[in-house]
Image (tube, protein in one colour):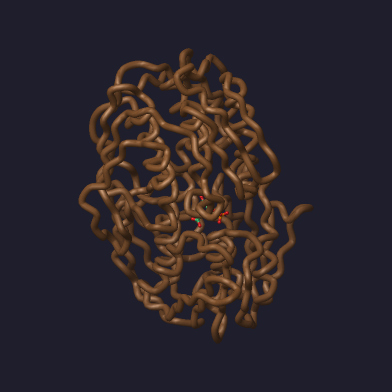
Length: 446
Ligand code: S3P
């Protein structure tokens, strides 16, 4: 579990260019879903390119606790013997999802329509995050949740013994909520429908269809409606996990920032529901080539080639927020170096991520000498442009991997080094971040 050891401070200092090839690990969202859907299929699912970050490892342990057999054959190569939809057994102990909102919310969904009880917890970050957004719709299936005040973990969830299908319009743009409802719908008879006003990442729908479930996606007056026919027999799959565009964003940013850089990132997933940052960077004037666009493991991918260049601030269209929701920390760091202001609106969800990311970025950027403005659901960064980012601060990473990585990237382009108080959380999503960045030429010490 992340965040339980001693703090690991790390300092980033500007230096030479970043050059070389960055092998980005597997996509976190697809990795969680591979283990969960593998556990719900009948027979053996094999996975290559699985992200071996702590978040995903915690989900693997949870699937074993629910009765699946989860085995590692080698780096990124895993096998899951599934127990079938409705085949989960009651875990003997508390399920600890560590730092992972995706893990806990999807797993609660997956068990909510089975006649068993499980208790979920996580680290201090996860225990502070809202869970009512999933336990409310799961109650419609007949599941019962008891947790701490405000719907916080630890939560004990008793699944519905006689589940009914659900039609649910998500009140927030959240792929985790959508996915929890769809996974619960697997063991309910009839059709479960989730309607979302704005499209969020669609890995669950795509993968459910790949596992043989009947899934329909339609545009309706209320929004994008995903319909799942319950109680399918899921067929085991061979899954090649695409490389994570959200992790790639950090070396991409570092290459944009460090003069003289040129970095190649092969096979990065560019599912349109995930790729909003890359559109934004191009609008900011970034030199990024998208070479050899192709499909791998059912997802669009390309080889990215990134070269250093000055950026200009822009207004990020709010309707793009869902497709780059995890990328605002690194965008804010890039915006700090750009010429002019960068305006981010419609980003209320950033307040309930691994940390309050608007507050974490605002306080950290201010400490580095960058002017910001913020509101409940918006954030403005006044880029320093040719004046440069002063840096010279120690920034709190707040148990948030993306805050830690964003400030380390900023330090590579600041006049004085930037230190993060704890780089430990990086292992949740990108365990090879530090060696990978050093191999490209980044000066990270800690
Ligand atoms: C994820 C959905 C997003 C994202 C998270 C991964 C997923 O969260 O921030 O890192 O895999 O479904 P929300 O559903 O809360 O927006």
